[in-house]
Length: 134
Image: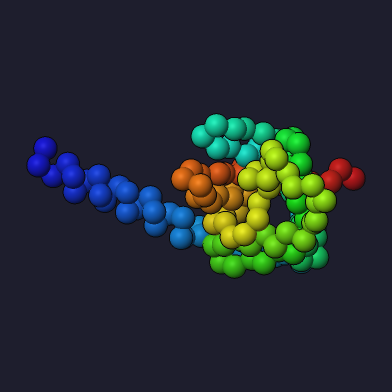
């Protein structure tokens, strides 16, 4: 029992390191990819779509004003959404659910997980690659 605090610290350090490792496939922002999925926070849940095409993205949620679009910058384990979509009325609901800024990501070729800590909580997107029907 006297080693319990050391075990807890080890678990926390290993979980923090998980966000900085990319054990998946690097996303090429120049590709055309379409994803369907969900976002999850401590208090909210919703459906989302993400289109990546030629260095740009379009993002939609099921919440009001839950839309974003702009340029996409992808690194080894981070993805940055530079929103260039201008809404004439500031969103009252949904702004926090549209990705803006830098997030950690892991992509296995089928599932894309994006996450970020903000406002004292975590927001996570789990997206599934949608292949076009022929």
